[in-house]
Image (cartoon, rainbow, N blue to C red; front, side):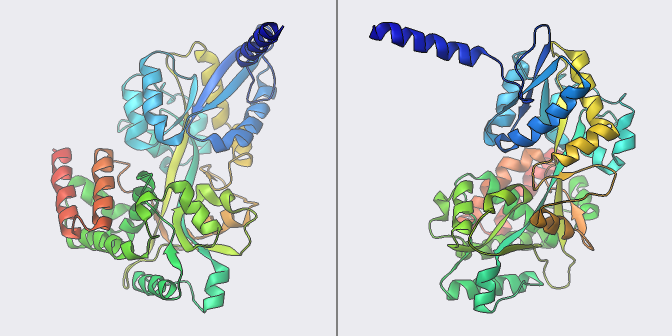
Length: 415
C-alpha cells in the first residue's frame, strides 16, 4: 500500500511539473503557441505576468512563460542556452556591448524594421541596443537610477543634514560613526554591487559625465589622470565607514542592515525600493554628491530591453510580441506594469505612483545624467576594475596603482 501511495505521489509530481503554467496565469490551450521569456529578475513575476496577460488579449492562442534566472548567473546561463540552441524565445537584453555581443553572435534578431521603435523611443533610448551602423537588436524596456538611501529618523535625531559636496559627505560619515552608527551598509561579498552600486556611482562626479566619458573611451583622457585617481581616493576614504566585516556582507545583508537601522545609509540602485516597504522608520534618497566645485552627475542607466531569439521555433509570434511592445499600446501597458524602481524609457511624460520611485526620478532634475561608466565601451574592464575596487578598499592597492592598472588595460582595449 505504501509503495502504491508513493508511486501515485511521484506520478502526480511529474504531471504537475510537466503542465505548463503561463505568465498570463492560463494553462496551455489545444493548438496554441507557447513561448518562453528569459530574465535575470525573479522579482518581476507579478508585473510581467500582468503585461503578458494584457498582450494575450491581443494575441489569442499565444502564451508566454516567464522563466527568470538568478541575476549573477544570467549572462553565462543565457549564453550557454543560446549556443546550445535551446535558449528562450524572448529574453531580457543587457545594454551596450553585452547585448550587442549576442546580436553579433547571431542570437538576437534584428529589430531595425520595426517602425514603431522610432515613434515610441528617442534616439538616446534606442542607442544602448544599437550597433554602430544603426541596427537595433532589442526594444527598450526599463532604466534604473542610482542614489544614496538614508534613514531620515536617524538624521533628524542626530541633527544631521543631507550633504551638498563629497567633502561634506565624508564629514557626515565620520559624524555617524562617532555617534555609534555604521555609516554605510555596503559590502563586497557579492562583489558586483560594490563596483556598480558604489564605485561607478562615484566616478562621474569626479571625472565628468558623458562628454568626458567618451574622452576616456577614445584615449584623449587616461584612466590614471588626476580626476580618476581622485575617484579611487574617494573610494579608499569610504573603507572605514563600511560595516565591520564588510568582506562577508552580501547584497541581501546590505538591505537587512539598512532596514534594521543598523546602518544609516546605503549606496544602491532604484531597483531595491520595494525591499523597504513597511520598515519602522522614515527614509529618503539623495544624489551622490560631487567634490566642491564640480557638478553632480546622476547615473541613470538603461538596464533592460526585450530581444527575441533568431532560432525561436516561433519567430513570427516572437517578433509580433516585440513589435507590440514598441507600439503606443504596448509601451503604455509596459509602463503601467513596470516593477517599482524601474523607469520606462518611453518618449512621453512618466507618472509614478510610488513616492520613493518619484523621489528617485526627481533627483535627475537639474542634473546631468549618464550611464554606468564601463558599459558602452569598456566591459572588458568590468572584472579587473571590480577586483581593483576590492583591493583598494582592503588597502592592498593604492588609488594611484589602481588607476595605473586600469589605464594599462584600457590602452590595450583601445588598440
